[in-house]
Image 1 (cartoon, rainbow, N blue to C red):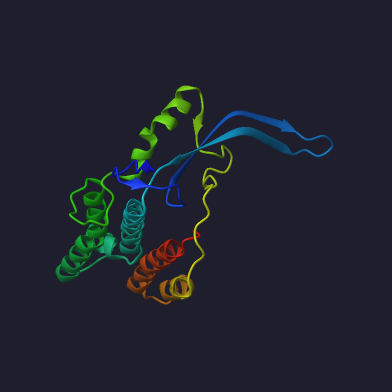
Image 2 (cartoon, rainbow, N blue to C red):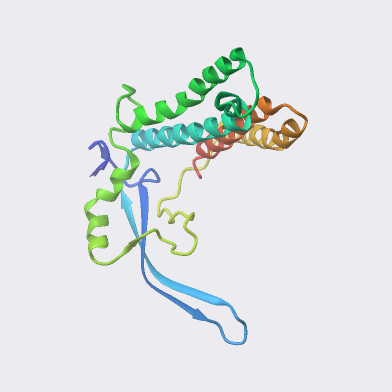
Amino acid sequence: MRECWFCGEDTPPSWHDHVLGLHRDVDTTMTPFIIVLRSTWRMEIVSVPRCARCHTGHQIERTAAVLSVAALIAYAASGQLDRLLGILSSSTGERVVAAIWAAVACLPGLAWIAIRLGRVPWQRLAPRRLGYARHHPEYLELRADGWKPRADPVHYWRSPPNPHHPPPANRPRRLIGGSFELLGAACGLAIPVAYFTGYEELAGVLIAATAGLLFVASKIKPED
């Protein structure tokens, strides 16, 4: 039995492990006859032990981060920022309302900062944030040996493969995840309609709703 790297509890190898990818020896060549660049590299994977509780806590932290960014984008898209800064002509009452919405838009960001600093007394949160995985001895040893972060030096957004497959999603989770995806897609389609018909405030709310619904839907499904 191994210890979770983030809380120290005993945990078996599972899909909850946080996988870090590294690469080295990148070689870019041109294929014959057709002008196409081909890149090859060596890849190494480090499975950092993580229990189910810390996995959930890190998902909550990421959700708070996405919602904080979405809230700020929604606030700016709704036109309230222009009223607050005086770019749009507005009365004193409208500026007060814009300031109140600014405080509301900052709440997800403050919650995310509090979670990262460990100031939220909630047992479902991980004692250490996800970035602590890069202090794992195996990862540090590979970095000292010349390996570079990320499993894919070309497509930075790709995550390294997890050697442990997650359990199949049960029917309730599939239904909930699918419902959130449909709602998120519907909100995304409604954003340009609301914005170009003069409902900027509604468009801002739809931006935040789209980001939140799609991100939460991706975390409900264990295979994601």
